[in-house]
Image 1 (cartoon, rainbow, N blue to C red):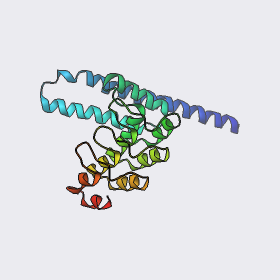
Image 2 (image 1 turned 180 degrees about the vertical axis):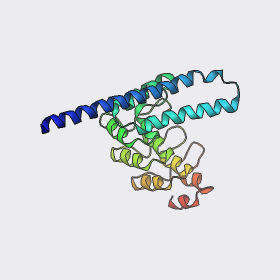
Image 3 (image 1 turned 45 degrees about the vertical axis):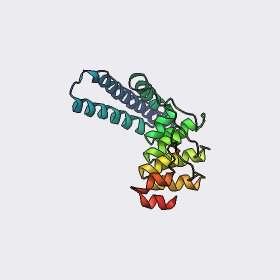
Image 4 (image 1 turned 120 degrees about the vertical axis):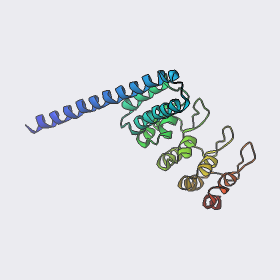
Length: 200
């Protein structure tokens, strides 16, 4: 009798998970359909508002996905209909989904560049996702990779993410590195975030 109850509970949980996954996929497809129609909006303010809402909607879905299968379904719809510039890893890092980042790191290079030319660490640092940054650093991500103009440290300093800056420094981020314009992370922080500049 106990075995039957356990089996029933497992089956119910599996069915519940499938229904939830289907619901998330429907929401993602609805957002994709809205994006397809966005070009018909002539008013600039309405266009910007709808554009922002669509990206925030996808961000909420991608950031809260609990399983790799669920995440991949949402990412696929986003990638095919909205933007294919980010990789699954940089997308998960950007939206702060620690659980999915941890899963993706098992089979991938933490410093693989996406089509924009950024690493997951750069994206996570830019958004201030401390837990994701820590996870990536522990997985061997290099804090001193400099793509385009900046490093993860420069970006975090510029955005005012103090805890991320401290974490990057702890893991060997070099504050003396300069952007193409000749600015260090300290220079980026000085105007708005003097408390961060002091750390550098």
